[in-house]
Image (tube, rainbow, N blue to C red; front, side, top):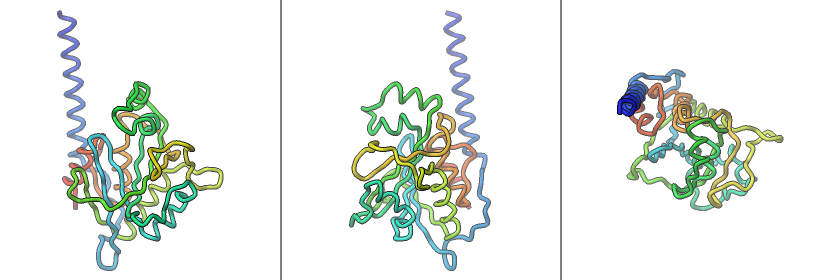
Length: 229
């Protein structure tokens, strides 16, 4: 009985420590430097959309002609960049096993879960999408000037692992459907440094200020709200 009580006390103490770290991760600011001119007159204006579900965030970029040219390798890999309904290119970073093997929760395996909780190789998931509805929960828009947007896109490009020809190295035969692909990515994934910390780092590259640690989408969004401006 005493052993059970000690185990329960230890578990509660661990939960309290994690909760405290998450609060500090939101409250303590990180980034915001860069000297980028604000979006607007003379600085350009680019809408970037964050799309969050309960555990993951993606970055959606407007599919402008300039961006489609930079991401032209997607056409090589079979994605229809000339599709008339294409409005956004959606990019997310994550653990290889969980990301590639779990298109829905029903597909979750012990191997994918174990790797996401320990250490896994990383991938970038790139998908083509239509217009994104602002009223959908978890959608957040930020507006960047030219230099800040360039820094964001450059951060995303640098997250790909280049293949022999210098373009992003696609994972052959791995996709959820006809409008997405997976690519080799820089870095290692674990539960402490995961998909949402990558999104936060991308936003900081563009001069935005986030919380110090953003392991979950709410931490990221709360940090953006708290440290805006």
